[in-house]
Amino acid sequence: MRLRFFAAAILVLAFTTVCGAQNRGVSVDSYIETIRADIRADKIAIITDAMQFSEQDGKAFWPVYRKYEADLVKINDEKVSAIKTYAQKFETLTDADAKTLINQTIDFEIRRAELRKKYASEFQKAGLPALTVAKFLQLEHRLDLVVDLRIASELPSLLIKP
Image (cartoon, rainbow, N blue to C red):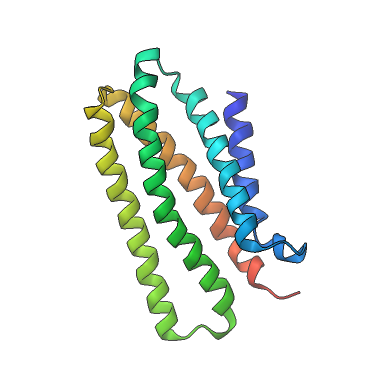
């Protein structure tokens, strides 16, 4: 239980420090990639601790999860790009830019939900019980909510020029 809360705290804190990288002379892109790699490792620890897979379920889960995570990274790349665009254009954001960002954000949420739906089926095809899949999807959703909330709460302060 402690591991879960500790790893979730690291996950949240990682996202809050991304924009601080520029102030320390670190490339934001390379810093984001470092943070994302750390988050993936922490996420695996959280999933392992929370799910308590049997040996058989673990063998069925992890190969499918790796494919899911690879697909999710592609979607999240676009989210990171949209956030960076918003931050860069914040003071000069036009109505057209705002419409583009709105559409990107909505599209991101739709594709993330579609990905979960696709992989709910894939996990079950791999032999995982529906209850196990539901528990994983709930955990995944909660982790996403924590990250999304933290990003949303930090964006306004990240955009204020010192």
